[in-house]
Amino acid sequence: MHRILLTGCGSPASQNVLASLRAADEHSHIAGVDLNIYHLEWGDLDAAYEAPPSDSEDYLPFLRAVIEREEIEFVHGQPDWEVATLSAHRHELGAATFLPSHAAILRCQDKAVCARVWHDAGLRGDAPQLVAPGDDLDAVAEGLGLPFWIRATQGAGARGSCKVDEPRQGETWLDYWGLRDTGWEFMAQEYLPGREFAFQSLWRDGDLVTSAVRERLEFVFPQHAPSGTTSSSVVARSVREPEVNQIATESIRAVDERAHGIYCVDLKCDADEVPRPTEINAGRFFTTSLFFTRLGCNMPLYYVKMGLGEPVGDLPPYDAVPADRYWIRHIDCGCVLRAEGHWRAIPLEEIRSARRVLAASAHFARDPDAYAQTTAE
Image 1 (spheres, rainbow, N blue to C red):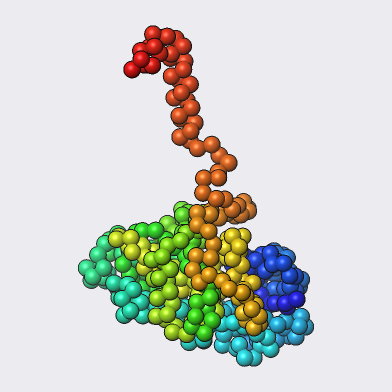
Image 2: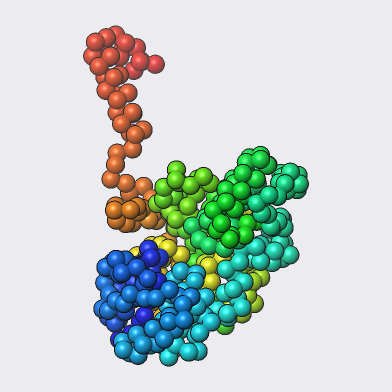
């Protein structure tokens, strides 16, 4: 039996990891810690602890006390700040982790750094441009064209992102965040209008162990975000896209030649339908890791086993799940897994076709000569 600690356990991403671990045949003792005591009511935990902030001086002693009390063997954190803290103190925890190098984690948590690396590697044609409140964006528009994309260089959930259709709009957007005194840094990039993919993978000492890809089709409350995207999907579809696999793999190796642990790459297609990397989550899973678990690829379980030195068997490096499976979810709606075409709703076109047939039948019933003429033709 594994004894696991999940930090930042109150987040949806952590709940997906927890549900994946509970889906395993073997039972694990799982403890969770989180800042928010209410959020610790979610999920099937064996023990739960309200935590101090991860950037406080109390956090590491707190973690070590929980690890000792619960006899924890393995620790996993989901939010970026938890990953960064665990990484910095990985040798002081008293339990195993399976993280990328600390330098790789810090590199991946800075989207501008990654974007420069990818530009230099030929994976993106646009060099990122740092922008700030008060900047004149006319020159940016000249270089990138219109529209272009502005986003914060750190953070999740499409933080601070905005499609800029004209320079004044972008300048106002930056001024707004400056007035809020967030301290965020921003960058401008080429706007990518095409399909959006998410490549989730596990690595060991520079070698890819397994991976799978989904395409995001709809987003959680897009109407609440000026950019129209929140990066968290309501509807996602599993896909097998060799070009996405290749570019995602090259994107990971460009930022870490000896990739180790979890690497999740977001990609969006440009106007020519070429996938371009937009960011990497290193050391943590995408929000909906349970999707692939339900399709037979339990990456959170494999990850724990790898971290504890246990075998995971022969796993396919790419396309570890079948294509054309849909993960449909929303707040207070639960999660549903469906295969392509296996919808319970009668398609609208079928209803329209049926109505046309009924209308034709009624017409011919009223005019038998018209029916005879149609059949003769």
